[in-house]
Image (tube, rainbow, N blue to C red; front, side, top):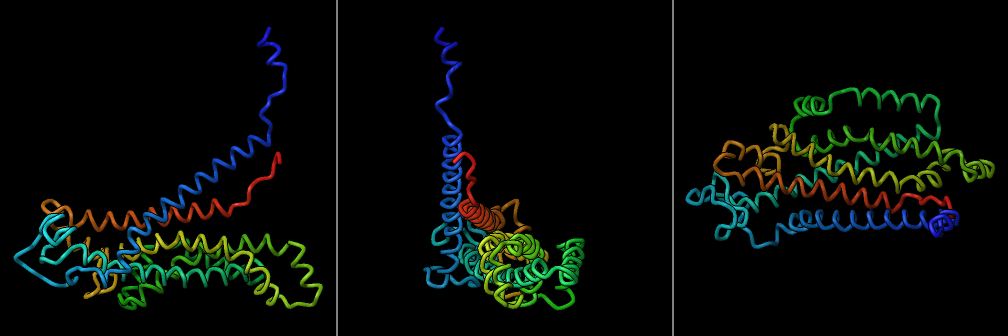
Length: 299
């Protein structure tokens, strides 16, 4: 009897309660991603940034009597490499080059992508056609093969590597920016600005782009991990910045011949790269979840 009466009563849990519970779960997930991403990123970025002031041996100081010491050896937290150089010092100083290339590359690619995507989405017509054809042509090419070809033609300098990675990544930013601008240009404030007599370039630069920069910048942050991986891949293949720069990819490449006897020469630099990539991706996902508009259904 009680079961039948209970089944006939309306549920005390409303759609608004369910929406609040979902929003709470999403906020908790975003908060966890932010904290985990920030911790993982800081574990790599802060020591790399402070490598010049930390009490570490020189990155290129050799001591053949202390070759291939294992991790946690006296005075060598990460051990030493095949030439007796401190591995931790080389990883931190090499990270400065890898991170500098990655940060500069994503900044350049972000500027190019936002500018091209905004122009294509706002003006349409032949501007959209030209930008779209460039996007399709570049996305159709094998990424790593294209990078290797450009480096072979112009040389493996830091400037060339930075420009190559930036050119390889701008399509991702441009595609997202174009779709965001297509939505923004149909909103009433754009029509009002045009009625007031503002020129199209002025409307785009002063009103539309500021509204799309924030979500586009999140994609730029996520591309930082890809840029570091691309630079490491090029350095591993011998097409990255040349010596005396000790990039992460070159450190792994130099240690691969000793992987069966000295595992730390490859494993520890690879672990540093993995922690940075995971941290940046979690941080970007958390920021994207925090800025995503919440559904008001059931409010």
